[in-house]
Amino acid sequence: MSSEELLRALFDKAVEVADPMQSLARHLPEKPDGRVIVVGAGKASARMAEAVEAVWGPCEGLVITRYGYGRPCTGIEIVEAAHPVPDEAGLKATSRMIELVDGLGEDDFVLALISGGASALLTAPAGHITLSEKQAVNQALLSSGAPIGQMNLVRKHLSKVKGGQLAAASYPASMLSLMISDVPGDNPAEIGSGPTVGDASSAADAREILSTWGIEVPASVDEVLGGQTGVVPPGDIRLSRVTNRIYAAPSQSLEAARRLAEESGCDVELLGDALEGEAREVAARQADLALQRQIERKGNDKPLVLLSGGELTVTRRGDGVGGPNAEFALALALALNGAPGIHAIACDTDGVDGAAEVAGAIIGPHTLSKASQEGLSAEAQLENNNAHGFFEAIGDQVVCGPTLTNVNDFRAILIGAPNP
Image 1 (cartoon, rainbow, N blue to C red):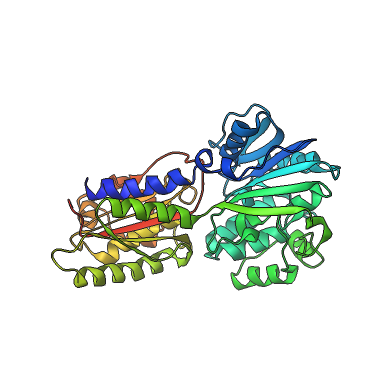
Image 2: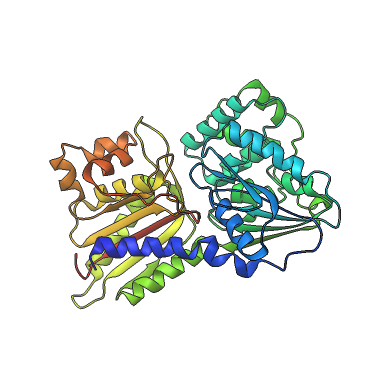
């Protein structure tokens, strides 16, 4: 197995174990008597709904997923909408979802299926905020370099459905919320901006984040954040009948990749499943570590794999096409500068890195020389945030299509491959 094949196999294994069809069934209770409503949102939500109906049979409900991520369901309606910037389809579907759970009684049951991507797909702007204004704020947050937790805090306070508000709308029905985590630290309140989880933050906190990152907002946003938003505090009685459960997380995918790497004859060093920070800065640190580990290696040592997950960010400086994983890979290649025997992969487990239909990229000792042959300056492409364009030109993109799940970034650096 070549270095590239092994790295791709590790990524595929990380995705496989997070597939709802492989993992959700054992977390479902017996289907309750009475009326059962299934709602959900996220890149994995349609696949989750498919897995639910495989166990429970046809169900009443509505789930919103990303364009291209729909799955066949018998009873649950699947609506596709835009991600990462919301659109009209998401707006209309979210309104219908709120109507679906409104007016339920104590004997009714709601199953919520939440995964990464729900922040954009669940779209119900608060106050007088228009969809176009919400889109502009969302795009500004994505381009700012702000950590995902801060972005989601702002999103909650500008919404009528996030920050526990979907659960509050379902009260007094009982609710089980099954989640796939895509956030560092696996905080349920941050997954999809926590539509079924209370939040103690305030509108003032949201205003401070916008100010910190220099994001200008329209008067309608100022108006909403100048008063009491609809975010539900954790002790609110409307959350008293909700059970939130994370059943799949990045740590499980990294553990599966670790086992496969060891079975393939490698040693493994786990760097953590919750890494955050600017993609190019994390890449520089991991390059330093990889070069240090290479110096420490002895001739008869096994190949070493450095594994990490989390969610990196990109501060947009140029007008190229890129994403955190591709930018990490490009910055890593530059920092390694053709070091022999070191290969790496960086991909998003949902199959989409940034806004491009590309999961990420693979690099190796020849990455920079291949670019030179194509007349490309890796440094210039990085400064223009054009990592996807760079890897497309040299043929080293990872394109896998919709994976139907999402446990965030997957990174593996292979040092001393058995067949480099």
